[in-house]
Length: 283
Image (tube, rainbow, N blue to C red; front, side):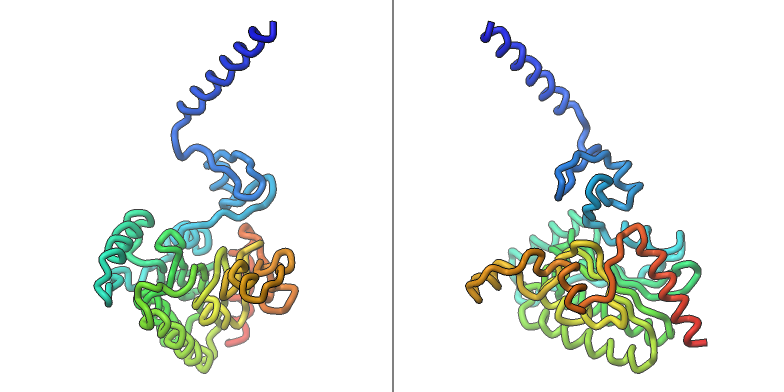
């Protein structure tokens, strides 16, 4: 009797396994927080936010642009700028090829101009699918050019920050982008143009220590990781356990580092409101 039950269970498991193998790839996604299995078409309709627990999946740059700007308004800038290999590292050359194939982009940031509720702006969106959106010379150059375009055209600037930090394959040239972007932002501020940062998961390293932290208004998505160094490195250095939720957006909001945490489905509306306030102020 026990043997017969075992056989039935084995057959059911085998059938279930064969059914799972027949499901085409790209139909389902698993939530990174609650483990819920989500139908991708429903996930996309919900701005890639888990319907069960509210977990925010990471977005590509193009998904973010489509979700944020008015349809058909985006005009890309500097799409032809390609990363260089200043120290002729063979591994880096291969990684750049892999990153292009994976992301469909030439670099880890997409910049351009568009509108939100018909209000013109300059926008830059970082994409973690390209080497974790690490900041090399071309990322720094594209960000700087976007800032300069906003300054020259007297438009507000919105940057969606996401990064694993400076790109180590470009050494000191990568670190120089911190000062370069900050200097450009100083000129934008002197011109009286609004700069809004939206920190997404993760915003770390040199990006968090430069342009991402200098917005006139700093927003963040729920539970985005924010910080210069990872929590494990900090714990090993200070030999203490960090507080629960350390380096998450909610922790930074509580300590005054960011202005507001905005769920993704409210981001466009929030940005539109802020841009309208700025537009009224400059008239």
